[in-house]
Image (cartoon, rainbow, N blue to C red; front, side, top):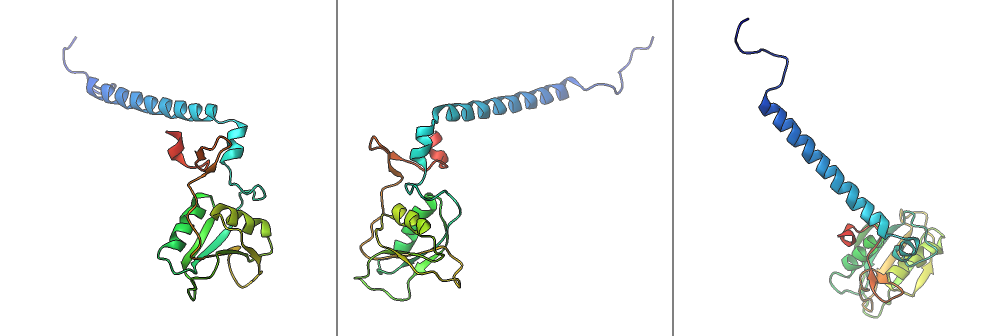
Length: 176
């Protein structure tokens, strides 16, 4: 019998240790993700889901293309309104200044496709009461928002029945 080094056939002790460490790390990560998702799902009941949806009960959450214009002349208003709408789940495709500024112009939401339910959902998210209907098939948006000088940014989320603000259901910051 010859005494010598074995060749081939097996992994050395160093490679086995690296493979084992990688498998252990992957298992820990998978377990952590599973527990985090399970804890989150266990804490959500149907009442929470209803409260976390957009406040407009008639809006089913479908894609709504919105354009936002600053009609009051206050710097940053269209950008602020865009943030509020995007947080609420609306697709703001463009924002900027209106063709002219009028300090007396009230904020308004205009339905562009003949679906006032969509316009009312957008208006409710922004806290605007003035909803108009003016369908225009030449525009590639569902709703136009003109923010007047009178508009103020609503509080984040909307009030739950107990008065506490609730983040949108898809916002991962609420899970931690």
